Image (tube, rainbow over all chains, first blue to last red; front, side):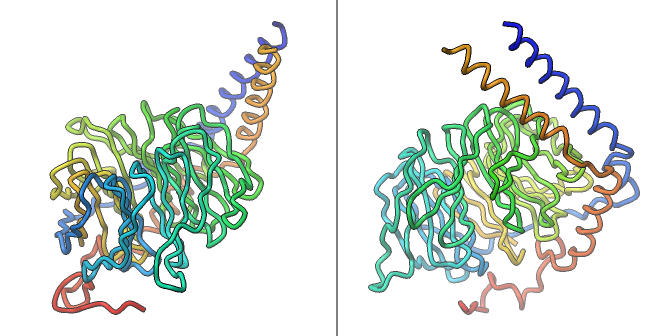
Amino acid sequence: MGEMEQLRKEAESLKDEITAARKAVQDLTLQDHVAGTAVVGRVQLKIRKTLRGHLAKIYALHWGTDSKLCVSASQDGKLIVWDSCTTNKVHAIPLKSSWVMTCSYAPSGNMVACGGLDNMCSIYNLKGKDGNVKVMHELAAHTGYLSCCRFLNDNEIITSSGDCTCVLWDIETGSQKTVFAGHLGDCMSLAVAPDFNTFISGACDYTAKLWDIRDGQCRQTFGGHESDINAIGFFPNGNAVITGSDDASCKLYDLRSDQELITYQDSSIMCGVTSIAPSFSGRLILAGYDDFNCNIWDSLKAERVGVLSGHDNRVSCIGVTPDGMACCTGSWDSFLKIWN
Amino acid sequence: MSSNSNLTSMKRTVEQLKLEASVDRIKVSQAAADLQQYCLQNASKDALLVGVPAGSNPFREPRSCALL
């Protein structure tokens, strides 16, 4: 087919154009720029709290905007909202489906959401009149598992799915406002930009994509990983993206220069990265791994500056409080630990 | 016809690549400088980086933290 062959050639030539354009702005590498900067000193965080109560593997956690409450999801079929200071359980929400893979706390604190192998995103109202937490909406349309969800506000949530798409939902009507299609593999993780105008997704096609929330376009695609991207996050100023992959490395991609700036890897680390979060200033990157540990990286110098060892099984999720005061790790060992 | 849908799909891929190719790019030196600048400016507020004095650590006893 003449036209197909022509299109294929055009696609290849465009890919080469992108590679060349990225190289053209590479007047310096990040490593060159920070050559004169010292690595941060050894970071030694202590476990301040252990949140006990889940009876099975924890798959996800998300901090509330108050930096005190957080929600966790476990395959024991429960969502628990914790007061992280007192370790009290503020809510213990039984789920219809125990195969949960993700949870999210709404910025307002009024709702939480979760989903997993049921292919749905269930929204729970925490502030119901009678004090009971009930399912408020069930967002169903994905044809694959729900891997991640993040609220934009009380009426909009973005989900990522094993069906290779991400979706922006109108919670009230339960309808899909926008479908973000383009990934060629399961979408594993998503993160919303600090300005709420864009979001990024990481997938099993080894790429991360930046999406415009309002017009639905994929603006940029970042490759380089050699296996599934399991975790993704924004650098705090919104100008860069950090990813964690099954290829045992994390990467930092800069959005404005449209390229990978640095890789965080060590020959002694041979297991996949499950979760990732930047510290408040972005200088530290905390990443959870399959080998039960969490490594802390100096984001500018790409050196490992600390380790969080405290779990007896895979660290599946990690989150730093919005105020930067502490980080929480969640594990298949059923515990959550708060560190600072 | 499956060849038509392959064609449509390929056309979409080419359109998407054109969009991604046309993005404005700043120099890496500028991007690196801005990243480093942000880290430096916010370092003092980064508790995991600089530590938290025991008295003002909401996760340490004997202080309890108030839920606002």
